[in-house]
Amino acid sequence: MSGSGPEAANARLAPVVTDPASGGFFAAAAQGRLTVLTCSDCGGRTHLPRPFCVHCGGDTLQWQDIPRRGRVRSWTIVEHQVHPWFPVPYTVVLIDVDHCPEVRMIGYLPGRAEVSEKTCVVADFEDLGADPKGNSVVLPRWSIEEAEH
Ligand SMILES: [Zn+2]
Image (cartoon, rainbow, N blue to C red; front, side, top):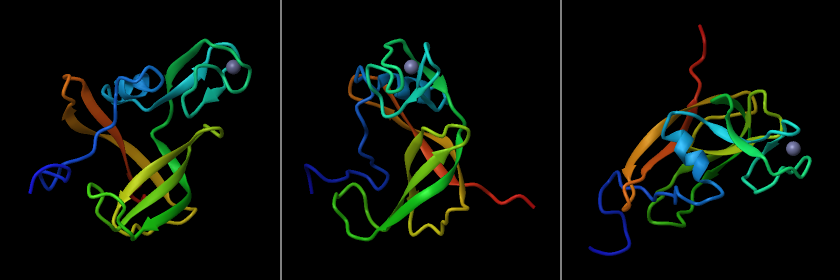
């Protein structure tokens, strides 16, 4: 086989990490930081990235660290494969990030994850290597928080 499919079992579809709107997110991820745009004027968080603050309209936004922990708000288990790079089953989770009521992130969990609205998830980072131009491609990787005993 050649062409469009995965070339190795662990091959991944990588995002563009140099886009002006979202590049800061990936640059921070390459440093092991989970960030969202935060307004220097009002302190509000703007997620997904935009060139202006969604709260006050200000344009002095900075990438600031947010907790790498949250709670599952909603989820769906994908059983129908729609792309050759994403074999099923897998679980897509909507995450309420701790202490950031205006930030919800989308996460991927492998397989049919057993989650509920009480499930806490934590993020570490997965290094996918370099893109063709040599930029590091690092993605947040969510997993279910181990229960404390
Ligand atoms: Zn603002």
